[in-house]
Each structure stands twice: as C-alpha cells, then as structure tokens.
Image 1 (cartoon, rainbow, N blue to C red):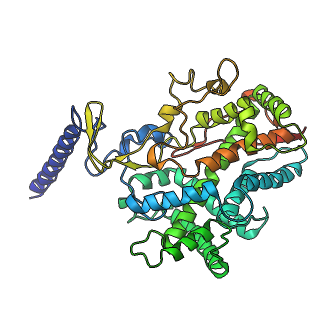
Image 2: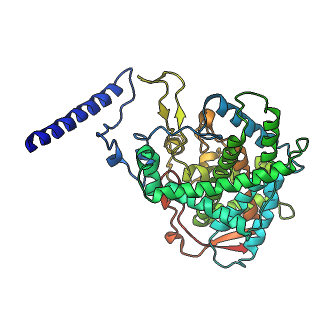
Image 3: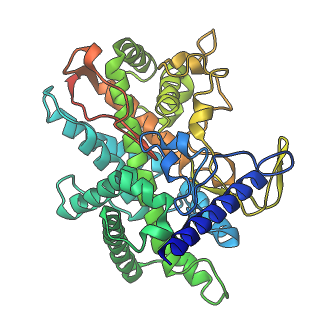
Length: 449
C-alpha cells in the first residue's frame, strides 16, 4: 500500500513536470512567446534567481503585480487620469507663488549650511542629501519643509529608508516574485507593510490638515490641487479623484521622489571623489558660466555642456533602477519573430540600454565623453532612459533632472570634495544590487572653495 502511494506521488510529479515542460515549449518558437527558462513545478524559477543581480534574473522571471490605486500601479482610464493630473500639476505648479526651481534653490541653501557645519571634517552625506531631496518633495506635496532635526520629519525619513532597504533585501526581492505565496507566511518581508502603513498614516494626517484649511481658489501644494479636483468631480460617477487615490498618489510621489534622487546624487558625489579631474573640470565650468556671486539655475544648463554631460553620465553609469516598472501589453504585439499576447507583463531592462556598448563605448567606465561631441557640445542620446520608457515613464522626470543638476552644481560651486581614503581604495561598486543599485557607504570631506 505504501509502495502504491509513493508511486502515485512520483507519477503526479512526473505529470506536473511534463505539463510544465509542455507549457514552456508552447511559449517559445516562431509566432509565439519569446524563449525563456523552463519553470519547475511549484517552485517555478526560484532556483534561477540571483539576488545580487536581479536585473539579469528578471530578464527571464517576474510575477504580475497586484493592481492598486495611485499613479504607479493603477491601470487603464484611472491611471491615465491620475498621471495626467500629476504631470500637469508638477509641470505648471500653479500653487503658491514659488516655482519648483525656487524651492530646490531654497533647500540647497539649507543643505550648504549643514555641510558647512562639518568644517571640512569627514562625514557621510547620506542623511543630509536625503533630507534635502525629501524636503523638496514635502514643499511640493505638503506645502512646507521641515527642519533636519524635526522628530516627525526624522521618523518619516526612517520609514522611507527602511522601505528602500527592505525592497532591496533578499526577502524583499523574493516577496516581489512570490507575493501570493509569501502573503501566508511569516518572515522579515512582513515588516515592510508596517513601514508603508506608517508612511500612509502620515500622508493621511496631512490630508486632514489640508481639508480644514483648503481654499480652492488658491491651492498651495499638490494635496490642495487634488482636494480641489475631488470637489469638482464629487458628482461625477466613477471619478478617479477620491480619498484613496489622493493618499496613494501622494505616497507614490513621496516615496519615488525621495530615495531615487538622493541616491543618485550620493552616488554622483562618490564618482566625483573617484575622478577628481572630472570634478575640477565641472568646477572650472561653473566658475566660468555662473561665477561665485549667484547660485546655479536651470537656465545655466544650456551653457554648461560638460556639467550636463557629467550629470547624464552619473545616471547612465549607475543605472539606479536597472529593472523598470512593469508594463502590460494592451494588445497582441509582434516582436521580431514572436508574438507577445495581450495582457502579458513586460519589464524593460533599462541597464541593457544604458550600458549598450555600441552607443556607449566601454560602458562600464565612467566617462562624460559619452555625452559630448568632439567640439565639446552636449550630445543627446536616445539610449539615455534612466527614468524608464513608454507611457509609464517616471512622471517626476523633469523634477528629478532639475534637482540632480542644481544640487551637484551648487555643492561643487561652494566645496571641493576630498576622499578620506586613497583613490585606489575608493569602491564605486553598488552594495545593494537588487531592484536598485545603491552605492557603498562612504565618507567625504567638503572643503570650502
């Protein structure tokens, strides 16, 4: 009897393997799905996952994310309405009297003050950069900035840092692949939900304060604009502008616009430490175009091709988000000799484009020349897509590009960055290379110029 039971189990496993193999074979070939690794029964492709290089793994494996509210994971008409609203609000910023550029410049002054306090001694720039970038988002979304020592602000920063770390941890990456299974199991991956809840509670509290002081004729920030839109469409059935989408959209802008930009600048400063000659050339251009009597502005970028090239090369080289957000095929789509069926989830591998050797010779080397013509003018590239591609390209691209340029230029205008170790010992290899490429922890000395 026991032998019969064991034989039954073996038979079921064999049948499952055959079905799995047949399904895989059916997905590949001319006129069908592109080829990929054969999934094993039950565990799928888990054995092929490489936590230290997820972008490589995800060229073959990744699940369909659950639908949600907000800008990032909503779909169809709701996504279109929310994205269009976010883009127009960020682009026009018809709130208050200050432009986004002015808010970035104001926060840059606070950042310089904090760096000055280090008096040229070694410090880790992570916290200060995160505070500065986060405050720009706070100014746009909440209508105000926070002191870097504010307890409420520090708790918020801690939430975001924990979320970013957890998403890039092995458990976080595993959860993103097998969420439907891991939802039923305990483990470190469950901690991230408490962090999300705390951050959303913070946003919800801010929304209540805005509701009490709202003047629809004079919105002061993103939340005010969204609340005004909710009032406009309160009688409209199935409106996309409701409280859940307000909280989630605000959360999306906040979480996506803080860690990504601050990490990019932090990685950029590390590269400028590693390549002091490049730092010197940027400073020479800043002195020539901007001088020392005023702060850099966005209009200066057109006259600063080398600095612009360095900023672009930082984003290309680090490939911060090697795997873009998921896209869904809206109709059967022919790709080369294959057909990708409607409803298939597609993940663009941005690093494969940013490190394309034909477009960028020696792509693994940090070289601003990748974005310069022979005569020294700036050279655009269609392969520059750190903000993703297609209709789901990052809605905050304009804001992020502005922040990165202004922060780097403002810091180098006032300080020369010095490493605390020999250049040969300065490591620029990411320590977390899961869904994001995060630079190693380092210190620098900011010497006043």
